Length: 237
Image (cartoon, rainbow, N blue to C red; front, side, top):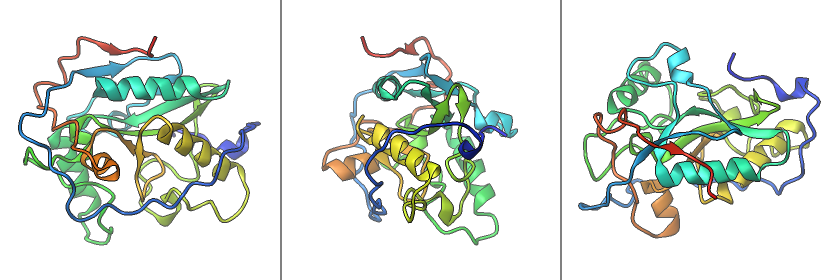
């Protein structure tokens, strides 16, 4: 197990406002414009962030145990971790994905045709329409308490209604409070939440751009670009 049930731990979570119900994205999102500037890909490195390498541990190919993100996204994630109360941090399930891994995941989860659309984006070779994780602008993350990653009501990649960000808003409880803390920490650092997955947040992607009425910041990362990591995403000074 990558994560622990927080209800088994003596956690005290500070209060935060309710999680608003996210809206599903429209059928057509802003396109990545030709000539969008290239942005470095970095490995996230912060004392309050723990990469979990979820897909490496699960045996998937074409992935890495490191958390690779675009440099501005890594900086925002580091700032989010630094802003959390004492004893808390962030644990990252996944960041950048190659198109090959995106295809493997999509084919696996949609193999029997019963999963509704919206959970795993189809892989894209269209430079104007990259899948979020292909851009290095999407990150799958949970809270960490005293270095222990937490399961906030479900495991990672739980494709059920319980994974919806507002699923625990119907009554009080530690899971509800922890989801609120994660949501507001990420949103306060300019991340866009996902309407079906409590762990998924984006910055600079097409969904992020739609919510802000601007152009996307990032296109897809080339397969040869991501492994060549020469910088680390440090916390802002």
